Length: 257
Ligand SMILES: NC(=O)c1ccc[n+]([C@@H]2O[C@H](COP(=O)([O-])OP(=O)(O)OC[C@H]3O[C@@H](n4cnc5c(N)ncnc54)[C@H](OP(=O)(O)O)[C@@H]3O)[C@@H](O)[C@H]2O)c1
Image (cartoon, rainbow, N blue to C red):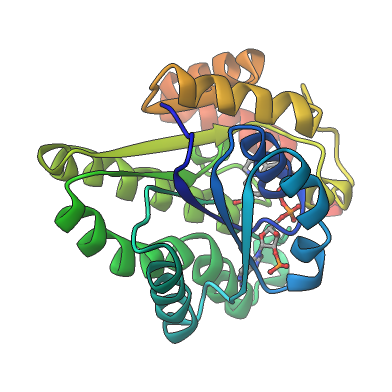
């Protein structure tokens, strides 16, 4: 994939993976549209992005709000007349056990992680279908593999994203629209900084974005990393349900909930 001169949207660009991807892509001399609620954080990237030879357009948008999402896509089309790709990366992760269950957390998590992508698909798919070109990269997670204890809401939101994009991939191929599914393992960002548990194979965000960029360049449909976590979750996904349940039961104690 070549980004030179292309109009690329990134949601959740105010921190972590989205911010680092924006900085990496800015070296490709493209037109970057950075989206998040904390617009002041993305405006801070202006100098570096322009120094790297790219143009920056920032939009304040809550991806859970359909009207704001429509406004953001209309604004990009008004400014550039085209959209070449979108990296739908906005996400939240709230640790919640079912011992203290609150459905509000599930609603909010799905509103950002799943419907944040659905809201953009609603606006972008007609544009890409008409253009007969474009790419959509959705950020899922390796946590989509199973219903890991104390992460049921996050895991299910990411499994929903993975399934959605997988299904979309075949349907939009005839329109020359590429769908990419990105599955990170643990990456050191503000999202994981608040975790109080051991995160195996935790990866530096710059390294994670190098892998994502390499995946884009190699035209991959699925980008998974780090390899150790990809292997581990691949095995966990394939073991019999009873084995998974046995391991999950061992990891949960009343004290931890
Ligand atoms: N870090 C990891 O280990 C890891 C692993 C697997 C998958 N992921 C996924 O990677 C993506 C990026 O995560 P990260 O680790 O970079 O986390 P992060 O540093 O917390 O960044 C999350 C981004 O999402 C944006 N966001 C959250 N709610 C939003 C909303 N309602 N509307 C618009 N934007 C919103 C935030 O921007 P504002 O708050 O400014 O709106 C922020 O830019 C997420 O989808 C996450 O689930 C991360």
